[in-house]
Amino acid sequence: MIRTIAGLRTRLAEARAAAPTGSRVALVSTIGALHDGHIALIRAAREHADIVVVSSFVNPLRFATAGEAAAYPRTPDEDAALLSELGVDIVFAPDVAELLPDGRVTTRVGAGDLGLRYEGRTRPFYFDGLLTVEAKLLQIVRPDVAVYGARDRQRVFLVRRMVRDLFFDVDIVEVDTVRGDDGLPVSTRLDALDGADRAAAALLPRALAAAASNADRDVDACIAAAQSTLMGESRIRLEYLSVVDPSTFLPVDEGYRGPAVALIAASIGENRFIDNADIFLR
Image (cartoon, rainbow, N blue to C red; front, side):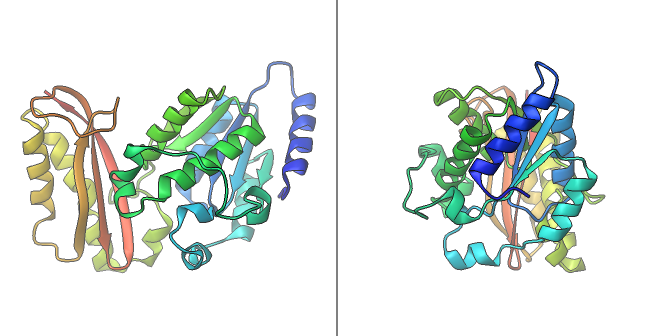
């Protein structure tokens, strides 16, 4: 694993020089603790590029406190073995001092008002911190392609907007969410659930499916159907449930017709989950 920006730039220059003319570079940015969802991103990156770079950085700007960041699970040995098995060309794993030399006192990219909605409502710092580090990685690696998972659609939307607004010369590829047999998106949090909590969590994708099945009515019917699916399950603490326009990521107006995204977030015990589904309001 390469730990320094200088080392990464040297290795990238060598890889580009050794590759055929016109070869492309893909970046997959992660915070480590890799799982099947990351494997799907890396395989998609390989389909779109000749040189695959994976970053592993637990971004402290995404957490409310240093203690929360320190508590995030880390599996560096397992991650290194997996990345080697997948044939990743370059792994960039800087420490905080390398990527954020002044810590939290750093120039930041702002997500704007949208960064305070949905995921940003309870974590108003989250998307500014996320975009700041994504911008640094895009600047350092200069990839032709950057690959993100669809599980966090708000993140993908905001990264696309940042790339457009700041004129980054990179294509954004969005990869479908990898799900378990019960429909849940794969996540590091799933291992912390007991059987009853996992059964409760599995109601979240079912709620989204219920919303989609009522899309031929109206947005209120979609939300009501999703809420009905969750009724009676006391383990679920619903945080938000919304239907948004994918072109603006703002809630759709009454009477809206066309493609939309249903978003859901909830806590079960000490674990928090997000999910989404494409729907079409008729």
